Length: 258
Ligand SMILES: [Zn+2]
Image (cartoon, rainbow, N blue to C red; front, side, top):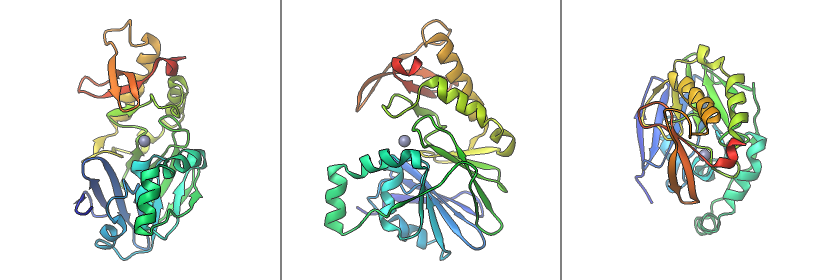
């Protein structure tokens, strides 16, 4: 399937790649090297899209192990980095029968993941990326801080529609502690680009989400001004809690409150 990926230049060194409104990846070009953050669903050759923009040596950073962030890795032969705590989830998703079948049909192979960890730094030449661990949505979720541009790439860990109802998502209390551990990023970044975005968000989203998680833990979505409502998704029924008065929600199940 072609022509799914729409490219939008956001800055002199940042390109947003929107995969049919279903997932978002980014290209960051330094003077010596370029990095792709998340490769989306794999239906279209994202490497070819990137090569239409830059000839620089490449690396891929996957913010976490979910299929809509890693499947496009099949088009790359460079280093593909993933936090080791998401290796199991990535392996599980790569075993989805439709994906295995498509790889066989198109003779494409998933390259191995290389580990990346909290505090790791990648120099692109004039631009620096710093890895910031944020276990929550998945155990091995990371953010990537583009220091010079004060932009934080958050994957699915910080967004307007946070999924915490998944089996692999951590308890909300643990997620809150992890958000507090990295609250320093709000001093280092002005803007957020998340894994399903169409444009920049203000870094204020970080604090709004944090306040929402804290409120939800305290009220269980039952006793405060705001109440949780039912949330249906392809895995069944969960709950959702509004957190910014503008339609943003935290999706969760009751067991994530224990
Ligand atoms: Zn995800």
